[in-house]
Length: 385
Image (cartoon, rainbow, N blue to C red; front, top):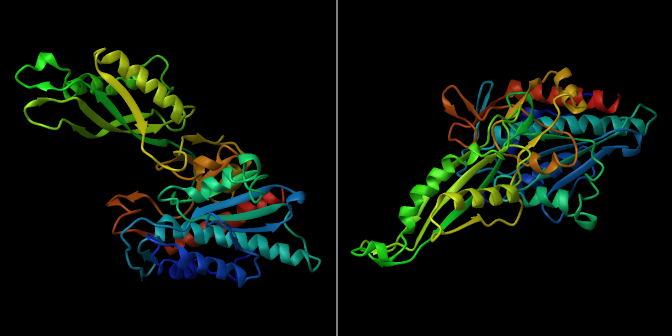
């Protein structure tokens, strides 16, 4: 495989010039044009995903390369300083996208050579770029649930492995915690503050509820510490309650942030939380928990066997040793279908603080180039195995 006809750094520099925190249309069109100009049959589906496939699925493994084109606000203008590319999206996830596109185009070039009597790839590679990973992940959800009978769409339905582009500092990341968010509500009964015993104080009940939250993962049936991800966490983040300063409050609530580990699911977490809090607050206090509204499932925890073929291929190709990834990603959706690895250039944070999603977002051009080489070598290994 060769990337001689595709420069991932130049591609990234052009891509990062587009503002993608409000609309991805221009950046997505640039991606499609870059593929079409190189002879790729690239399409945009009804959910806004860019899809393209190279190779023969009947000839060997099918590897799906996924990343996202959107960014978080505000936009940070692109600039280059030697080896350092700065700006919104350079790290998350333009750099990883450039590496994946390089790998895909190398596979596509081999496919084209096969039409002229050369050796084609022993399998297929699909590029699947989603439009809204930073918000609701409707694109990724469509990929895994928008096909026949509510299953995966045909483009990825027979995937044997997924490589998800994110800033991992060139490590092959094989697991990530999930993230659930919701509101725990406590119900009481209003009364005059001069006669507090005549009502049920929901704000006062927060004391017992917060104590229950602190001990939630000490339960005998709590998820065990995961061998890759460690322990799950549960943090109260926002508290609200009461309506008048001289009235016993009938309502109080606390927003909770859950970082889960396998095998915990969203439904399992909710049921266990309600049971645990109910055991710790007074019987006259009402207890309920509702997830924050969203049209797609939360990104649940996932883990891939570090000895999976796709992991070995990436590590043998030059990726750093397997480790967990520090943020929730759309890999959560794909890991339920096939072994999944998160990989790419860039870091979420460095010694000076936050990088991804921060005003100082950057990626090193040399790391983008190395990531492209790793992806190409890994695909060559997987498809020619």
